[in-house]
Length: 200
Image (tube, rainbow, N blue to C red):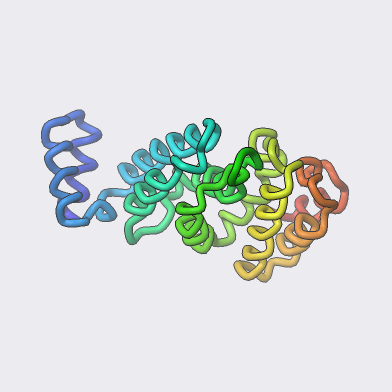
């Protein structure tokens, strides 16, 4: 923990040489998860943004795996840093769902087990973030295609086990039962909007 905290101190103070040396040491001893939360969050957000860029590129289904492995290493034993939570939920769900294009319908099958592992980390705040993402046009852009549509419904089904909150589960049920290939419109539907009034 002390060495992980020193990494954060070196990062904040711009001591690049010591930060890089500490990074190498933490990699050698498999201790990257011991960095301070701010450093973990900044590193994780950068890795998530890189994964998102790869996801929207051509042949993403060959290129996401190494990014998913890198994100897994960054998570360490502390779970999802609060500052990275919204980006984490969005990128993981987008990549798990795929983009519906090409030979594998935009899913890197080698990375799927990592995405499933990450989704299992979701607690109530992440479920709320997931629900709010249906109002995000970038998030819903490919939900008119079969694979992304089905996989978003699979996520919603899995998340029902995360909470007993009636309103959250009602909103998840709307996603699960919404007309096929139409989830891009769910955020404007009264059946979804009503329970979402009570979801904080």
